[in-house]
Image (cartoon, rainbow, N blue to C red; front, side, top):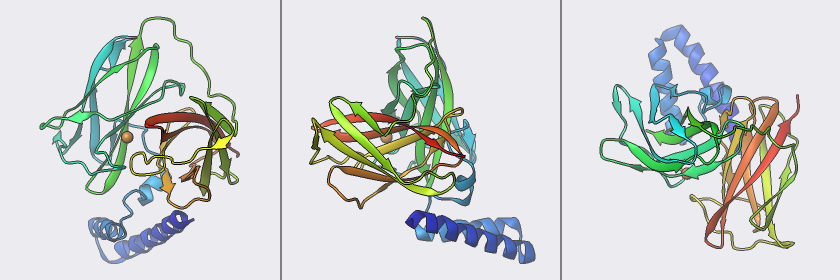
Length: 284
Ligand SMILES: [Cu+2]
């Protein structure tokens, strides 16, 4: 709700600054004024552009480019993935902390299977590196999620894992509960409407008892990645600090369009990070 109002506020602000810009000033003035206003509100994750175009669809966005190698690997073989974020002809070396880390690497096969959330290391020249093995063949999406100068970016490229027999699996049917490593996770959501912020509440239990003492993961109760079926557009979701029960993790998400989405909920309990997966459908 809070973020929804904020987006509306930004949209109104944008409309006003466009009107002023076209009346009295050049386009540059209007955009820098808008950035200043947004920085003052600390709202870097909710730009007017992001509300329209989902993240994670390209190797380049907002003058940042992801260059990753190798993009051709053999299934089952561990390779060191290396990548840089280029901007103005050079590699970016200064990243903001975003959810306690300066770089988040999300790896998932194009059919939504094999989800991994990794944290590579950067050298002084701005090259990030991490050993990764792809146990199953197929085309993988590799997302680099980061922030520079207060702006969150999510760039992505494909990595092709050859060898063996590739069997694609569609997103599983939507279901309100999931199981992972002995935990049951129940998803409760308001009515899902495209383009409208909704609260997604996950309740965790173990052998029928609510899980107590969730441990913080990346500075929050949990972490949620949401990917759209068809193009794996990457949604930026926001953890909510307030929730009802101690075994609940709540996020606010805005699904940009009707369709199905795969959700990857990560939480920490008993010293380990667990992942529960859901499919949700946003009706037309
Ligand atoms: Cu991360």
